[in-house]
Length: 325
Image (cartoon, rainbow, N blue to C red; front, side, top):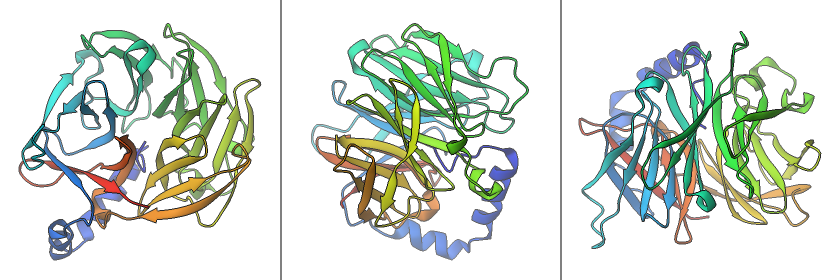
């Protein structure tokens, strides 16, 4: 999920941009107090790609972009939000050096599904599944295989039968993995590659499964939103009015008619009244912390929270900021 550092050159370019920002400006951004509720936590790493609220476990689950792994952040019962700490749950030695990116909870099977990718070389993509009681790995589905084509497994959604759908932000396709961890098919379409090389630097990214039997997917650099009918894998472009979705990242389904598109410089609320043939941007929310880079959204007890990739300070402080549209 992220404006997803799909190549070493992109990462270097981002680093140079951040480095060019005056320190005084970064300090002023860090000192700014968000106008909404915030969960702040200390972490073991500077980059956290995705956060999802686990209502059963009463915790946020977060993915480690730097080095791979999964952690948990448990809010305190007394409401104290100033001393939260991340605890590592998963750190697989055989996946060391890869990034853990988009995650989704498969509640029916008590699993966490994790998109895994080679951050800089784009030579390895996989989907890992973990039992959320024991944190034992249930399966590891390698997606890139022996292909020399670059790929980047970025985000994942799961349907009612346990099939997982993983976006390839580099190769502009979607892998389908069944409940047993077998790669069964790939969804491809010319619509996934809009005109202009610059529109495809980061391609398919955030993805959600809609209970009416289709996928909704965002194309980050172009801002195109797709609907994919899972009965025949037909791909259509959702006609979006009311604003652009360019640089959209993670998606969160709020209801059958509403999604949140996380991203920078603002998150957007998008609504549809015709089964996602068309949609309208009806709300915007900016945390004001553009230097931290919003990458995903999650819902905790009816409230939307935005995850920021970048942590700051000696304690690597990360923020989950409530979005109010």
